[in-house]
Image (cartoon, rainbow, N blue to C red; front, side, top):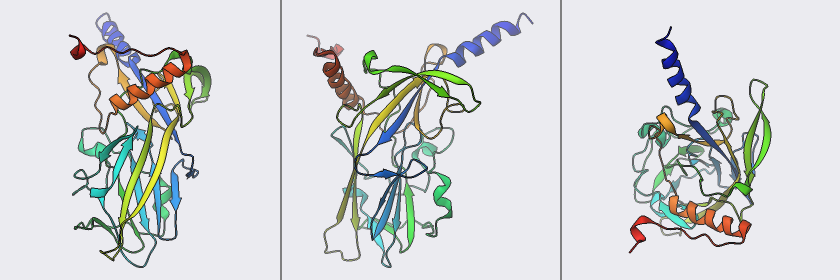
Length: 282
């Protein structure tokens, strides 16, 4: 028994070191459905965005509603995070219909919500690419998750941005969490998806779809996603014994995030943020 107690103490200490940051996204121009997915519906196609899961994966599902094929030109498509453009080119050349997490060591892939599984439009079983891009056959769809938005905490936000709120857990208990809300103007993370769609006429110019999003709510807590609201993006951070053991995928927009956080700090405190970096010292 004496040998077991220290082991239990180590396990408890390791478990208590986990911290979580939950992200909720908003958009001024795109509505959400009941599953919290963003839906863009036009006469020719339907685009569904979801950012739910570990490290905020950019899940994109594109439906072709036409009787003619369409192509997604990934070479001319990009994700723009806080004005920094990250090209989709290359990461989607032969990517299967699963998320990037499955390729980079995360325990399980993050999929779109099951709401779309009963849709009348079948999935394209095989991905065909050519100079036009990736084919979407008539009345079918493709699903891609080229990257995650972040696998790190927004550590630079001022404490004054947070307030303590109560949340009901899955088991009915009440937990206190730190919560911050943002508008598009002061959000620590703003991003834009830039999609280039090509029709059968190769001579015609691509149709460009631009959709903007931002983090509207951020929650910090020690409660894991098994108890907390799973319909959100989340990032895990380990400290103490667990520090350095976490794995993630995708884009960590570190410089852009720090810049946005500094701007928010200056706005709330009225004082400029002076940041020193080791390699900048004379």
